[in-house]
Amino acid sequence: MQLYSLDPLLDNRWEDLVASHPAASAFHRTGWLRALAITYGYQIMALTSTPPGERLSNGLVFCKVRSWMTGSRVVSLPFTDHLEPLLNENGDSFELTEWMRSECSQHKWKYIELRPLSWEMYLNYPLAASRSFWIHTLDLAPSLKQIFSDFHKNCVQRRIRRAERAQLFYERGCSEELLNDFYQLLMITRRRHQLLPQPRVWFRNLIACMSPSVEIRVARKNSTPVAAILSLTHERTVVYKYGCSDEKLHHLAGMPFLFWKLIEESKTAGAEQIDFGRTDLENYGLIRFKDQFGTRRRQLTYFRYPETTSGKYGSASELPGARRLLSVLPNSLSSMAGKLLYRHIG
Image (cartoon, rainbow, N blue to C red; front, side, top):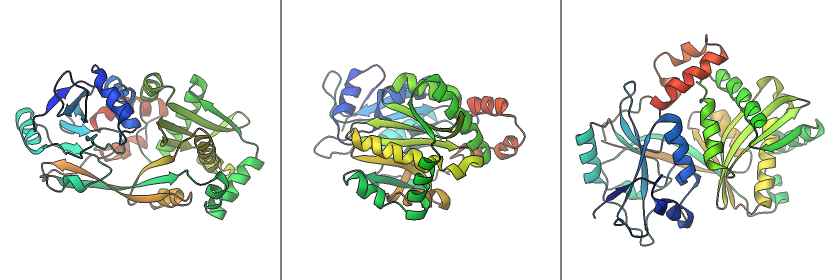
């Protein structure tokens, strides 16, 4: 099968494919791709078996990550939980083996990484499983009453009622004020977990490139931000992408309260499911938190070519000396470090 490359940021056929393909997600959207390119300088390209000038029937999109620090590579896609290949109705898969071999040899890529939701089609490729996660989803088909009753009684239901009794102020949108509250809480959360914060410009670019399909939700007590989440929407799926909170105010139950608002509003808007995002297999606290909302979880595995590729630098904390650096940096310098380093870990 002959493969053709295209630039999805310039070729309108890509957005048409994403709008019509049942496996497409918010991460396939041109806005997400453009935000990655603008923020981190990645070169975006897509592969298809459709000849130039014809309507796309399939496609697989990549970012080229060039880094002197962590090695140059091709990833589908950086900072993206998962990305299904958009295959045609006949289920034909790409013959990627020769393309991967040629690309790695010609351009000296360290590896090519794929992040599919399903793994069956990759069994015949010379790929190695690299990293695995849990992916949680919540079915919104039942009534809101039934969804709420499926929440853990003590850890979710009672905490939502506690937040309502505390009369938390709630707001959603993409205003600069909401972004400031969100980023303030993100800095607190990332420091708590000894992780570099994403650069503020990343979130600004997401809002600029993806609105109205991106929203920030913030819970406040009086004028103090308690918790915040950022979500993406594509067709009938809502993606919970980022969440943050002030640990000193956890007794106000801001995060369960915001998730309930997200669920209520998504259901009312006609969404069919909420993607709660990926979770590290060893992050038992977050796994338990997502399980308590009645979500379904399954394993998500990334694949790399060549098969011998190591899995170093899968997150910002794994960069050499990152945790030690975070322990001493003030917030302003921590944010600057994130801006400088994040492009190397995509």
